[in-house]
Image (cartoon, rainbow, N blue to C red; front, side):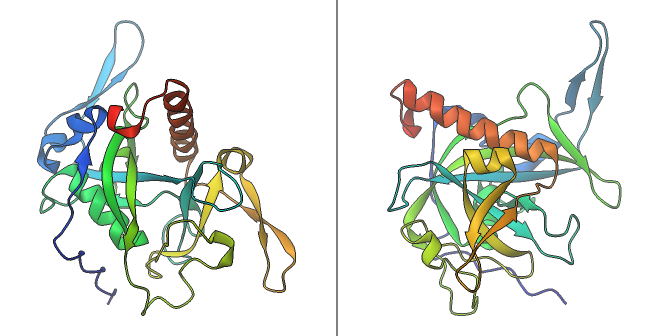
Length: 244
């Protein structure tokens, strides 16, 4: 039997929603009742009604003490799961019991990374072409990814998660507590590292070694890079997440 997910934080999830994310503040049923439209040639299009909804959380931080580079949180899938040992952003299935799609995203990032959302900022990817995938049982799943600003001063306790919290390499960055049943490792990766698909890390004996960042699929990589681009454009325009 799989272990029960991490219980929700005291008081549940309370977060702000930026203007660019208000269209996502609906129950799961709203998204499942709306067919997704895929454009074909100039005169044709296809509509698909999703059978399930998944959310992804793009969590960024610039809190590293040695530089001000933007970094994104990536999780490595467990070896016994589908797409074993591939990398992805936190996320998963949104349930009918979730208050809204955004609450489902909040619950998933809490269960998978022990992080608490402060603000839902904007949708990343999927606006022009909806993102869908098939489960192993053939179910059509619609996936929506969201940039999430986290509360860096609050997170899950790690007393039962030995070896899965941030070590010295991630000092100064938000503490991450993964669920070892779903993921085996996490990193905070720069845009350059995501684009290259690899990063240098410190090995067990202090030596430098290359870590391959093979993503679950190409759409995941594209969404991550689009997230970096959105944040760069926002900074150039002098906007903050509340104005997104």
